Image 1 (tube, one colour):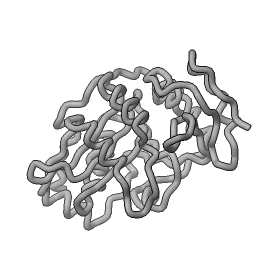
Image 2 (cartoon, helix red, strand yellow):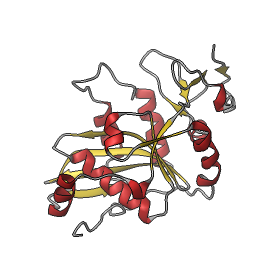
Image 3 (cartoon, helix red, strand yellow):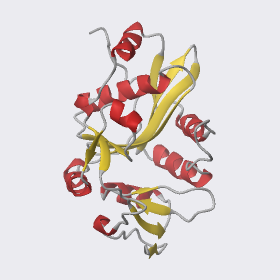
Image 4 (cartoon, one colour):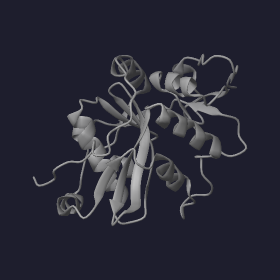
Length: 235
């Protein structure tokens, strides 16, 4: 059994009380208000639920993370980056990125980015906590990702592409930005083969939660400039 959280204050159980099966399920209920989501992330917890479910809060063990300077980019992707036949923007189309990430996909039934989640993260974006990195070609949004930045931790949420490598291009610029800005961690939440191919590695939950106490200090909100993630890939 998992506890049902009261709606008045974000008091989450300790993460070690999360279930083993399903991995990381910690609590239900509460709110998707900004203060709830920010408090959850600082403790290694995130919301994830489907249409018709209550709000569910998770903290899996192990955690999939990318150390920004250790991200893995293939040779073919590096060639694409050097060609530069695209434009990278930050925070110029956050709602559109979320909508694209929520769109139906051939390999999945339904989406966890339900209307309540879109509203919650768009509110975080307006407050300067949630950010998007976007790939544009000929003035069209063709790929991107979004997540939440708190201190030196970036919590990745989802990505999409409508053109070959468009999401990977956004990812490459994100990790270059995070490295430049001295971020310690890019949280990817759940382990997948795709994330592992990009340099994702598993970290024990306790190590991750302990690290967050340092990484999320001195957090300052604010929208990212449109050219914040642009980089020179000539090398």
